[in-house]
Image (cartoon, rainbow, N blue to C red; front, side, top):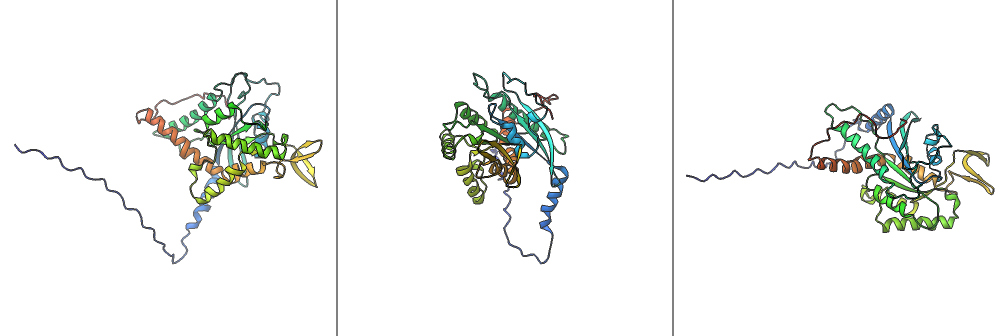
Length: 337
């Protein structure tokens, strides 16, 4: 009886890489109109941007967010009761607004975390925040794996977390380090030094250097992360931000004053007006340009391609490669959207 010889397994066909040939066009095609097409589509549909603010009470989180978007978008601007007591545990409050500029609509969601860092015992107080962030990934994942999924999945994922550091001038608190150590793995953290007008220029410079050093020693990566720089141009631009600007030392104010015949946003003090958008006074303008004018799209892309994909891969791996089947019908967190 002849012995059966197994057939050799065929190697998978690897598609050839397309050859890069510079072809000179004989006439106008119109490829360059794709940018205008994308712009028109974006103007029609608008886009989502979800920003979280974290820090202990009294650091001016709500004021800064209002200043950032030049409108009353914070929780405290939306019917907040000034007699409201500090919550005994960390709460998550989300407020949604649609703001429009130049025909472009943005659905902005500001997520506040009242109660964070305000207790005598702040052990593990970052856990409700981490849970909320992961729940937004889970919500998006469940929508994504539906057979009849929506044409445009509502995006509630947190694209950016502004972490407010108290302007002590000394060093970061253990709570600051623990929070950023845990949360930097799941969200884009941008550290800011609040109420920077309480420090001298020398104190501010020294404090910024000390914070950067402490973050480096503790292995904490803030946004923009070095490993996500796509090319040399990105690396050069982001290195300057990481080594010089971070953490942004800011002052927020939604009040206007007259200075040299111009109306400016500022804080009035006995010795003069601190102009919020004046780079000689604080770094608010750098923060605004960074978050909105140069890196907003990248914040969304890093959230989707890195943080969400990391969550998605882990979730599917834990589930044996199968997508989650349960569909949540109720929100787990109070929201005013």
